[in-house]
Image (cartoon, rainbow, N blue to C red):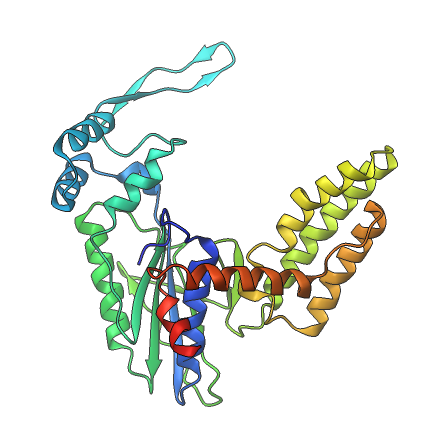
Length: 321
């Protein structure tokens, strides 16, 4: 299930879908969730042009366009320039040029032929950010482990390099007598089990209380509030102060707020609101607090999902209305 480059679907939708699957399963007795977050080594640099060509042709992409893309990825020169100095040119026929709009799209197409979605396990992607979610019941995790193993084998066949050191697993298990999880092994190495993981810009934690995410946002907000105050000390007008707040501070404080705004602890809500209140005193006007912004954006996202019958949460929401 790919969330990148889909019409009316973005980062928030990927996080919301993951959270929906996790929370829905944890409502059942004897349940736990294991989430594997995969990390690729130089993802875009490992695309094999000939393999991509075959995949595109199987998708029904027009042959002329496929030939153009293959030529674009074959024998492309690269060099480093620093002021007046230029390194020797190296010609490469592997990977896609960095910094181009086309590279992440090509990687998405390159990996589109591996997907999985069942009642108890699913894989979701956002470009090269890949996660496998296993909904475990009474310790039955065979399907999850098989899916991880199959994906690792598929990566090997398609010459994609997984970084086992940076690949992490998070286990969400609220059972009081739960046994310690048995580590998953990739290429002979145990995948590290972590309590928190930064996924698509938000900090997920195995308690699902968003405390780690709130702490990170508070620290970022404090540093940006300092610069807002410095701008005021230079007699910057209120209009520009408001612009700075909205673009630099609020954009960070309320990033993906639809996913976590209604689930944070009262203490964390209060801390973030205090930052907003302090920013408002600097800007010279009352600013919207967390709850107001979260409610407005959640309603907007809900309408967007209801209007998009291809959204993975569309049917679920319709069924619950």
